[in-house]
Amino acid sequence: MKIGIVCYPTFGGSGVVATELGLELSKRGHEIHFITYNQPVRLELLSNNVHYHEVTVPEYPLFHYQPYELALSSKLVDMVKLHKIDILHVHYAIPHAYAAYMAKKMLQEEGIYVPIVTTLHGTDITLVGSHPFYKPAVTFSINKSDAVTAVSHSLREDTLRLFDIKNEIHVVPNFIDLDKHDYKFTDCHRTMMASNNEKIITHISNLRPVKRVQDVIAVFYNIQKEMPAKLMLIGEGPERERIEYQCQELGILDKVIFFGRSNEINKILYFSDLFLLTSETESFGLAALEAMASSVPIISSNTGGIPEVNVDGVSGYLCNVGDIDDMTEKALYILGDDKRLKTFKEKARKESLKFDLHTIVPQYEAIYEDTLTKCLVL
Image 1 (tube, rainbow, N blue to C red):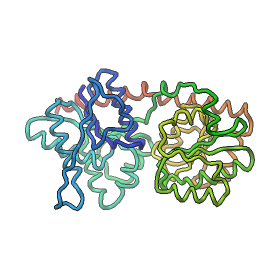
Image 2 (image 1 turned 90 degrees about the vertical axis):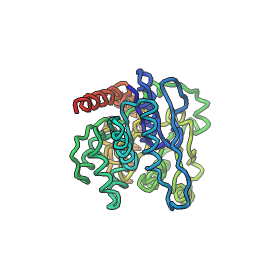
Image 3 (image 1 turned 30 degrees about the vertical axis):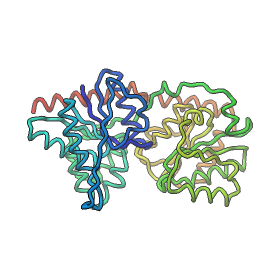
Image 4 (image 1 turned 90 degrees about the horizontal axis):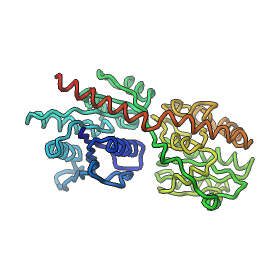
């Protein structure tokens, strides 16, 4: 198949999953065309089966906000015609599914039919989509897609609750390339982060308010009072300054390492003893899955799609949002005994096997084939 993939080319979960999906599909013999405004951050190698097409938005003084959806629709039309793309897989309802539908209608005028598969990732539904200004457009885009997937059962239920959806929504979870988490580093890498007697606690996010990183700091503050520990914070976002000030006020700034946008996440996770995910809501929790694949147990909020990834009492523990005391108690329980910690690490890795890309990607292939077959019948 020739598959066009539309996504945000960023460090966010949806962009990472879309890029990894395209790369794996290319290894399985499909021709992949990424169509977006920048080359995706995880798209390091182009090949005969992997292509990138940049969407350029011309600057016109007439427009206060430049019309990206219009530029994307036009680019999709051109790319489908030029490369004879069979199917479009768009990640995020707004603006991608909306733009893809307009492209589809333009192509139909020329006798070309290209079906659309839309994957819902979370904020396009729970934040952007639920806003009254965008709700009609989101509903329209989902209902006009030829197939719709969501990354968790929780997100599927949220979508059906918030919108008047006529389409069936298939749940296809996010995935991970476990081969990329089967690595070995020397202990000298660990000593750059912490001393041998210090536990390494890690958090990865875009540091937005919804991630409640202040709770991460509060839990870590309690942990380091009971045992030597260091906190690794990976990511950039609007809450960083507030978090740094919080660490300073608590007197733990020297025990927290701010990595920003790091390209060495694998090394950090490899030596981590615990991962904290204290979000207000998560549609899936890809960062937690990456940690589990690196044999890191999770202390997380019991919200959204996280319980579908982090199994309470097995790969870690689930706690109510904002319950600092419970999160601290569960963290100290895991970290307080080396044998117990080793068991949790092993079980975290085992749970991550359910989300191996070699298991999940064929589900997308089946959806493509089914969608194309139905379109041929129509």
